[in-house]
Amino acid sequence: MNYSQHFLVKHGSRVKLNAIDPDFKDKHETKKDALKIIERNNSWLRELQELLYAENKRSLLICLQAIDSGGKDGTIRHVLGAMNPQGCKVASFRQPTSLKRDHDFLWRAHRDVPAKGEVTIFNRSHYEDVLVVRIHDLVLKPVWSKHYDQINDFEQCLSENGTHIIKFFLHISKDEQLKRFEERLDDPTKHWKINESDYTERERWNEYMAAFEDMLSKCSTEYAPWFVIPANHKWFRDLAVSQIMVEYLEGLHMKFPPPSVDIDQICKKYHAVKKGT
Image 1 (cartoon, rainbow, N blue to C red):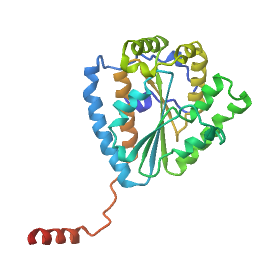
Image 2 (cartoon, rainbow, N blue to C red):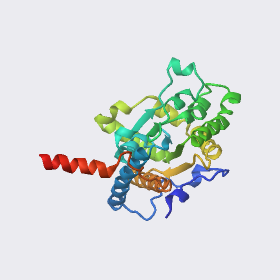
Image 3 (cartoon, one colour):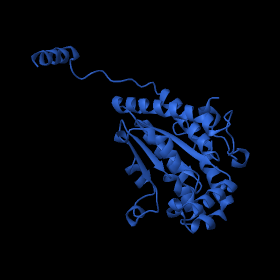
Image 4 (cartoon, helix red, strand yellow):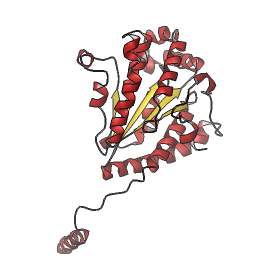
């Protein structure tokens, strides 16, 4: 199966999340069955990132969105964490500070986009301004409803200036979310993740799903596609994301740049030094 096509939100299509099975796991039955593929993909991701870094012609922006406990941190840790941190960084979109509120809503996103040769991962992203902002009425509808087109224009500008954009929506069920909340309660090492809003926000589940559907339908473009990843099975989430990343980066047909020095002359000097020792 070509995951890049299977999970792609095609430009102009209308997404219905209740029609997408978050339990989907393709032909893979267990985590053990998938681990070898994930490890192979992660190893190849490291090689492809090195090519991106060495070529220094383009950059890569990865956006992760999901409902609370959807697996953004896990995806970063188990898949995207395979990349060399020298050329890869993570930007988290927490509650905006007063400084950020004093700028336009895309300011903090633009501030963190990757330079040439680099990869940046947005843990949440500029899409919060058509999600939380919308659901909690933080600004009026005539304001946030314009953000879809503004986001598309922003991403097109990045694309035209050498930044490749790939966006993953990690799709879990309401029952799976509750199961993960319970696991946090049972594990003292995860108590720090617990927030009172976890349960109050669940009451807005349908509102969130509607907002996610609009986000995916209105902002999946050829230059910045969205992929809906079935994420109830964490291991399948990792497999699908790693596979799409490999397929996407391979499609860039990157090459190592030519040497900036005369290799023959360097070799002669090296052998002369070696002979002298």
